[in-house]
Image 1 (cartoon, rainbow, N blue to C red):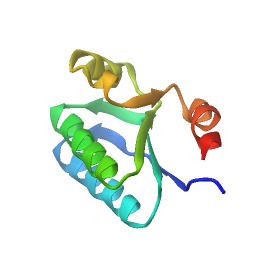
Image 2: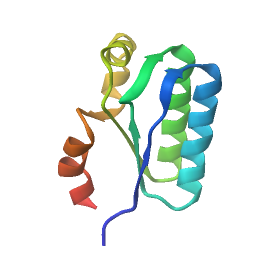
Image 3: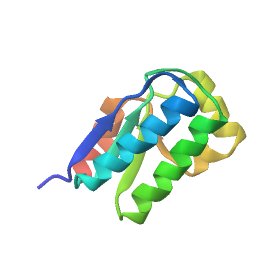
Length: 108
């Protein structure tokens, strides 16, 4: 059947404290047996380098477990950070959950 998908939706500012919380949440989701993690950024107002570092670490954890991590609903500020750091070439991103569901969830 379909691969299991879990949506993680952080909110507010993705900095030190929130970044560590996001990293733990993604790790917990992977340990629960989920195959695909979608991080929905629609409620993120700002992300700093610590937030980006947590995402990169989470990406490595997810890939190391043979699972997949996707991002959606990036704000303009987050998109800019991804472009400046070239992380837009590393992460698979989607405009919103609907686009993700159309292009990825149906593959499971």
